[in-house]
Length: 160
Image (cartoon, rainbow, N blue to C red; front, side, top):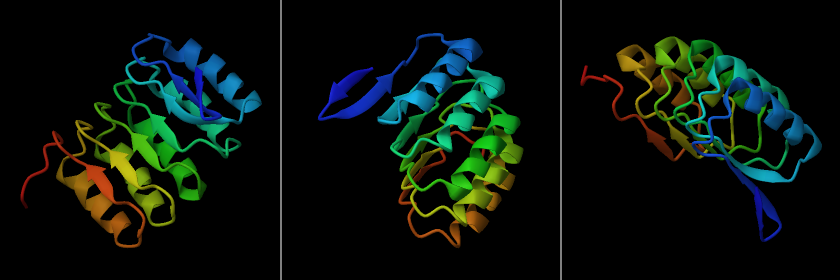
């Protein structure tokens, strides 16, 4: 972690922290609420590691950027994250790039978009959501007025 203009950014990209590291990081987040940016991409935390992070998000009002790219997050983790996004009023950017969440995992995230009024950027590149997941997102976006950027490349979405 390092300080910049009194904003705390934690960048642990490619550090192989796994589930255990995610658990320790979640404890840190509960005691240090000044973290505004958390980048834990490519750490293979999995669904179980994400559960620790999700548990700390509810009481972390300053976090605006959450990068979870390439962490082996599946349906269970994505669903838990979606439930938090439904009521979260701080996260502006969420990166789930290259996580195999599939259409079942994106369903809860899409549902949360109907209620979330802060998320501006959502990266779902390479998340295997296919046409079914894209249709869930389309439904969720009907009621969302804040999301400006959504990345859906490499998802097997057809032109149907």
